[in-house]
Image (cartoon, rainbow, N blue to C red):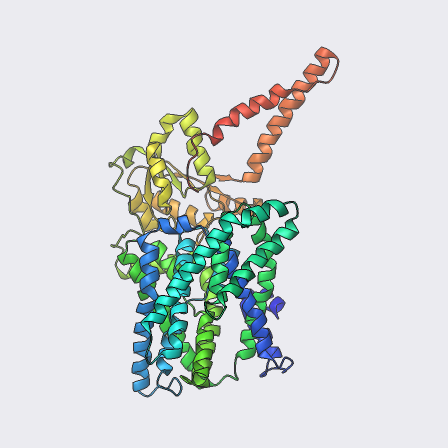
Length: 579
């Protein structure tokens, strides 16, 4: 089924869920024990959170400061409160969410938490974990997991929650973090030094460390979740140089158990009824709508910028696997009945599939939303998400006739080369990009810059007011998000019709298409590398032949390579951009 789904260019998650439905009670009824599958699949979440901890750069997340902390603290109570109020109002109007006085609460509260498993898996697949939106997304997810633990602590005594119990939970979490960090600092280094000759043994020890922390957390007098312990254990090991090796080995184990998780979800899906699916669709719509209030709204108040806030909101528009756990426990406490759990399961399944598309095309969705907003606002509004720095450069855009669309490795090397060989050209360069962290370094070099969406004609028009002669897009399509070089070429020709445009292609077919679309020149990295190698080989061959004729013997011509190294030795100089 996963193969067929992939052939149809649908999310693989859909194939896993369909596989679970096929072998489950409403399908062929091959597997009878859902509990065994669920117990095994829960390991997928443990491995996933352990890997998040290993990859987590706490310092980078903390650089976002008030944005990640404020949004993480406020998003859950805001979304949970508003959605619970909406579902309670609908219930009072006659729309039932199941029996029990807490039915609306159990639909609204768990649905305010997003899926760590789905989001991290998809962000990793699309190489977005280490982007600014990815870091904000992960930061909010961590706060959501903490909120989930608070909900689980309150749940048994929902009618009369105990503040002392909550304080004990937070104290226990803090204690577990201290134990993990001390153990990782004073005990694990010696163990890793002793076992460093065997990668297999180091992997086993890292997994043993993860499960040791999980077992410690689940002891009766501690009472924390394995998932939180796995995250803490991963963060504790993140400072070791072996973390990349652990991630590379563990990801295959993780993926296997994640597949089991979605298969188990498919097995839990009950026989669909029009009423249950209709209510689930309504819940899904409310979740997606009010994520914009809880994430985008809060992040914008904290001045994160349109783009960052919107992408984090798009990434987090689904329901967490914790919602299923919370509702299952609610049934055991007698708070709700099976009807409520069925609605939440269907909501989770619907949003799991839709969010696969949303995250894969998040930049395209963001671009479409920006264009819609500009049309609705008559093209007059230009906020921080569009171009924050247009007027901060002293008004000297007129003399800057070279525009770089996007700033990545090639552009960084070009600026370094200008600085070393042709510093006068720096006064002609203007950069448009959405990474604010590179702008201070550019300004130090005398390069002006604007924060903006390079795929938008309106933004480009306002981001540079001079007479542009040359536009350069040096980022290949494989690294661009939500736009490609063909689109950038069309936008550049629209905004600056008299400018020459240089774009980048990954292969000859794309290069041909770009030339036909009007590009003056198309960069191809493989071709440029081949041309440089050809020059070096010809130079080497000429000199070695001359030396052979002169001396009558073959000699090593180190000076040939030295000349070429001399040409490139400045490439790494003055290259301090955080890309």
